[in-house]
Length: 398
Image (cartoon, rainbow, N blue to C red):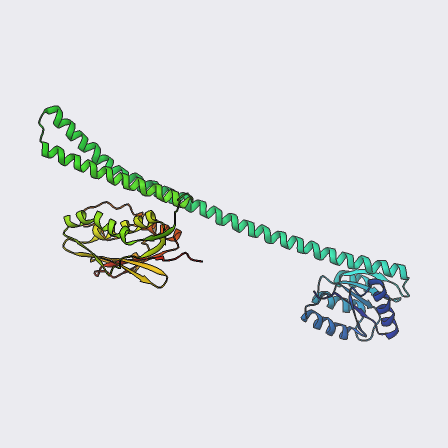
């Protein structure tokens, strides 16, 4: 840190020497002492010092000097460095000169020549103390103002987050109510039909069986939504427990494919597993990975038209295991791909056989992969199908 500088200005060299010696003795080299023989030289020195980043707490100036008197010099000093204090030394100053120095030059005190040593010493100490106290107070209030502004910005951000959360909560409740209302209404209506059939004894077993199947479908739809909502809540509250270990993921993927063979066959969709080695070891939570793959294969079947294929590929790439699920569905625009992994993402493609979609599956899949230090993305083109790609580490990441 640079030392502060005291500037002494007097047209008599002997006075300057006396000032310098007395100041060095008083301040014990804790300040640098500069001298100038007239006002013009003093202003040049001040300009250079300020340019080099020095602080000038005090200027001690004679009053009677050639070309520029002391009060005029102090006025210019005040314009260049307003916080610098000044002391004027002279035996010939008039009240107007002192008034000018006080009003325009930040004059701290006037001392008559020849000065009395004790009075001079106390004046210098008091002036420097005042300057440094003022600077500390200024820094304190500047820091305080900065902290207040910083805190205000933090509160603004937190307040905006609360507003966003409230908006998200309202949207969330609206979607949940809508998505639960429809299957509940269906269940109520179908139950009434079964009751009326039983009351009238006009029972058609095939119709009743069909009604019960529809009730099962609606119940499953509600159960899926509630399960997904509970998963989202557990993930966002940090309560989703993980058990990450080295796992052969081929049986996990094969199990998911077997689960969807019947739903796929109902739409004449073929599930094809390609390029598979006997063992593909990944560092994952087996249940979480199964949930991710289940979601992707389920979506591929839901959004594919009949008589299409869904291709599943698993390959080793460097320190990752990659799984690709490719469908021959409608594909997605660039804009829609940006929304894919958001909560309740509603996109233009619709399930091709009126299957249920909560809009939470891909959001959950992304969060689960994040927890396993994996990745997910989509390559798609409108009218040309979509390929969802996940990568999980094959070894613990250090």
